[in-house]
Length: 120
Ligand code: FES
Image (spheres, rainbow, N blue to C red):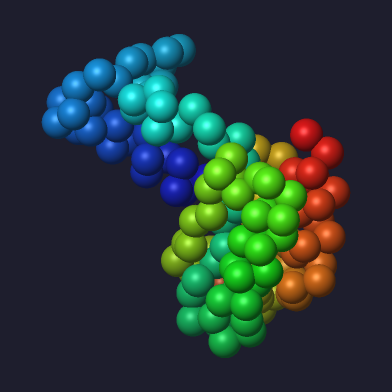
């Protein structure tokens, strides 16, 4: 959630710099072609504890699963800073479905991606 707020807050500056942005229902969007393809966002914590517990492998597993499903271009993967859930690391969130995974592994993330993103 913090990441989305940060992006929305920065949009007015992007708008001034690049032009061609539009405003819809109070949210300023960037050039249509850049964001149009994104349907899901995968937030993978890349903080110290999540890294120790395999965040990099999770990212690779998620990326390969998305590629296999043909959803790589429509799913944006973001490496976040610590989300504050270090005790249950590694932490992954799938948006906009608002699915959170804790203490997850490669098999589980691939299964959940298939269930949630694959059904669309
Ligand atoms: S390092 Fe991932 S939640 Fe803190």
